[in-house]
Image (cartoon, rainbow over all chains, first blue to last red):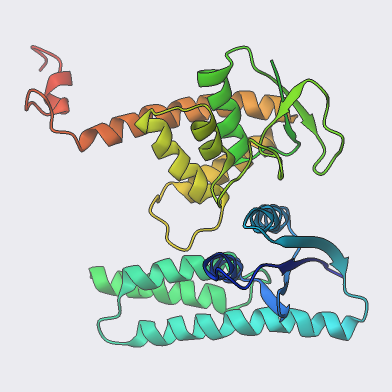
Length: 144
Length: 160
């Protein structure tokens, strides 16, 4: 059973800029939105720290944030949650692979996107190494 | 004076401790408490603890806050602040390629150190090195005063 972090927050509707800023940061972290303003991440030392600072930032904006560390009790529920994380990453890795196959693919851009995705791949899905191998092969092809 | 932070120091806290010693309090003594522990020890100024004055503000790292609070203008230190920012907090747009490496090295330093105090002390060397390297590379952008490339300036006279 995994440990999960839940970030629950409330921010004023106006101005919208701070809310959008926080939302983008949550997307950057690869967090999954369970419900409106309820986000979840698997607990690691790194995600704990990131969520802690985000909660502090929300409190400053001003807003209210609650950070929970939790375990999901029913096992089927947990596998569904994990599947939500892996499906999101898989789709984005797949899009990278498709982009890589285009003639004149923008390799430097795709490499940066891969590095971003890799940080959000908390469950290390098998497609990750495949994308890496495809990027390496494309790099060799580009320099040959 | 005494300064307190959470255990398990990483990139931002190593940077902060280095900066405090360097620019604020040469005799700084560092204390550590477990993450989330309250109350904080009396008579010690907290840093990089969420909700305190010398912590992240406006989405920027604590090192950034220290530069603002102690009114430090050194451009090399502001460059290091951008590095620590990107190393410590997830950013949509990354402009400092060295940032993830810095984060990794700081985490590794903590892993090979017996305790947080030792990790901070070892981090001092790392940040001294980073300062020197940033000063060096940042300086490259400026036109060389004499127009002589540095490599020529350093070449031994009469050698080979």
